[in-house]
Image (cartoon, helix red, strand yellow):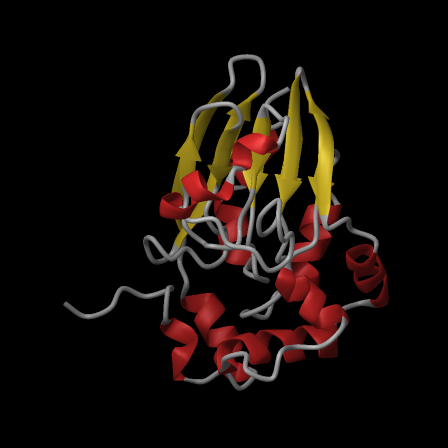
Length: 225
């Protein structure tokens, strides 16, 4: 079952559309949460994802902020995306987010998989960086694959279990204005990390029209040398 794994779309339809050819080839689309936050194409992204024929999705922390409350100490960029999403999200999309699980475990093709936004230990708030994984005892989890997001940085570590973070679709932090994803073949357990460029200017312009501050170009435009 050819599978594409996405995470951290963050209401950035331009980035999703860069991946559309690959998404169209996949038999299954996995989404690891944070459909909302930061940017302003909330309903457009949810329309796209919910219109796909076969998906497995979990909820992210920004999605939870939209459904409940945003931490007081959250930076301006986070508050902007959450408040905007609350104003515009369609009722049906909100109900869909409410019904998403915080983690999912089951079979993808012939392989067992655990899907989570943050970490298996803290589905919404956890972070798994490469230097922390050895200490995190992820091998306590009896799955062939653990897929997670949250850090906005791609990572793949083969083993038992194999670990993959596809990176962020909508706000990559390893390289500006690329839509990241992972292509997973359960039969061979092969994983290819993808990074496809897109034009971030429409994302920036739309957010500015809705009151985004100077922070809006961070992670979308390369910093001056």
